[in-house]
Image (cartoon, rainbow, N blue to C red; front, side, top):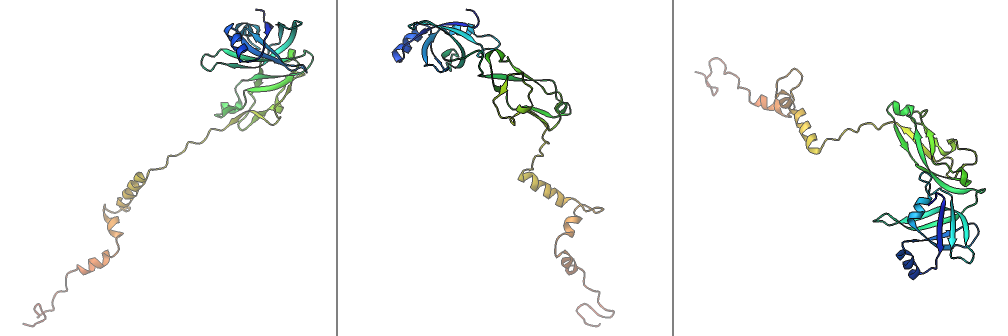
Amino acid sequence: MEVGKLNAEFRSVGKSHLRQVRAGGKIPAVVYGGGAAPIAIAVDPTHLMKALDPVKKTNTVIELSVAGLAAPEKLTVMVRDHQRDIVRGHITHADFIRVQLDKDVHAVVPIVLIGKAEGVKLGGIMHQVIHRLEIACTPDKIPVKLEIDVSHLNMGEAIHVSDLKLAAGIKPLAAGGTSVCSVTAPKAEKVAEPTPEQAAADAAAAAAAPAEGGKPGEAAAAGKPGEAGKAGAAAPAAAPAKGEKKGGKKE
């Protein structure tokens, strides 16, 4: 199968016809757009993949030959959408849109960042916000990818859609203020908060620590209220006067 060329057959709609299409090893598809009525077709999924350029993929312009119509048609189309089986991954349905080589079409192309930003060299982190960009241009100008040089980007700076230098005739469809990528400073390391058990243990250790220049236990004793009164009560009684016996009697 030649790249950019694909054969298809007109099909009837309805569940029974869909089963017949799939039983024959083909998948249902639809051609629409261009101001004409949609056409239901059946295509070989293997031939469809071979018709796509391995680099451009769904942005490949295809010459679609449709058999089974009153008058066989050759249509210029592109793959607008397709569905795959969730488990096996093979294509189950495809949508084609009619295009004209001299009129703009919408296409989605990948964005590739090249170079190492100055901010990253200083420890910053590169964030790529969008990886694909929708554009409008004639089919022959659809690029394979958009390469963006980020080597000049410093810490705290960003590149927006309006900053992109696209080839003549290519228009971005995203808002100009949309951020493509940016360099941000790394976040400071967060200090872990102590658990309640750790906090209680630290407080107990601080209370038991000796005062500066003192002996262990002095800080705790000095800090207890009423200690001075207890010390006074425990002091020995005054010695009896000369000539007196205990109890206040003279000899």
